[in-house]
Image (cartoon, rainbow, N blue to C red):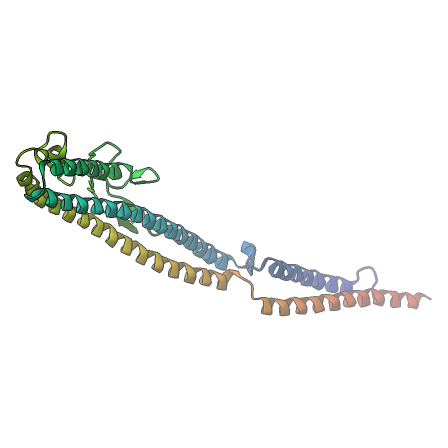
Length: 289
């Protein structure tokens, strides 16, 4: 029997140290709610979980991009809806001016109304924007050229994009109504003699403008439907990816609570074993009495 080196106590201490380490790890998992708190907990699992988290956050930003794009398209659509109303009124007034029962004074008043309506149509094209991005023409210049194509990032890679219609020029020039604007200006054709015939000649131009505007609205509507479909799909993907990450990263509280209780009991037993190992040394001293 030896007392210089208490092997039993050292063995019990080594085991108890390991148990206390396990106990601390278990407490860390229970307090954080995560099974993986550091790379040493599960190196490969951490790599997979981090990649899934990055993918989920990227998809979340793509969903935000899509919602912003839908808002942009709705602004453009509502603006063109008002322009469509303006063109409907202009056509109605041209028909009124085209009949012989309308007097010259009446056509004078109609021309002033049409002039103001076409000016407002241009104002809508100039003013309609989203965060400074012009939607119905290229820039804020009156009768500016067609708008640029907008590309919306709707996924993780550069190929995951949805584009809007390009070349939208919802102003007097783009709708080929410049001649009508001149005709209703002060001293224009519709105001003077033969105004009924002049007004009648612009009916086809108004119909063409309405058809062109409706075509642009249809393109924007199709793009919005595509975006909303992409948003729904991305939302489903994000949910499933987060669920997959949770399986890897999050702690199972039922299992970990059971493990904690187990480690706690073993720790208590280890402490008792260490005390007993030290007690053996005391028993050796009796031999010297």
